[in-house]
Amino acid sequence: MENTLTNNMILLKNARFIDWQTLDLKKTDILVEEGKNGKISFSDNIENKNAELIDCTGKIVTKSFAVGHHHIYSALARGMGAPKKNPENFYEILKYVWWTLDKALDKDMIEASALSMAIACAKAGSTFAIDHHASPNFIEGSLDVIAEAFERVGVSHLLAYEITDRDGQEKA
Image (tube, rainbow, N blue to C red; front, side, top):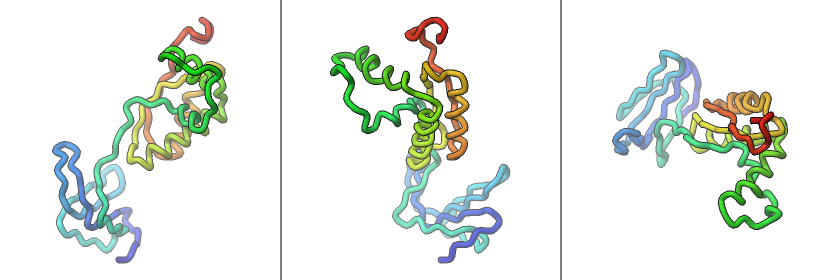
């Protein structure tokens, strides 16, 4: 099977497709046409010499997923040192882990966490994420940094900034 890309089409041969509404699994070929007027066609044996060919034998194909609740800056918690006190309840987890982390965030850290999470979303098949963000020492422009990082990866987003008075009225 030869891979060529013309007319901006991809042919997924021998795919096992999961219907997102019925969860039915069926073996099919899928032709994906790029663009605003592009189509997705399903058939048992599509032949198209103008499409990039991908053999999906043994692979499962479905529509993309969405992440409905995210904390993008939590990407930075991987490998983070232990908190100064072992939390004993949810409030202490917030105080000694998450609020300590979000207070340390600057523009570069926000960008790094957003790129990391956008890549993780894309690799897991999610093309849309919803996040409410907190970085009390870098509020202005923080959502723009996240948006730009997600757009670089190609993941759509809905972003909001956390409203809280835990850092004083001027930051609320």
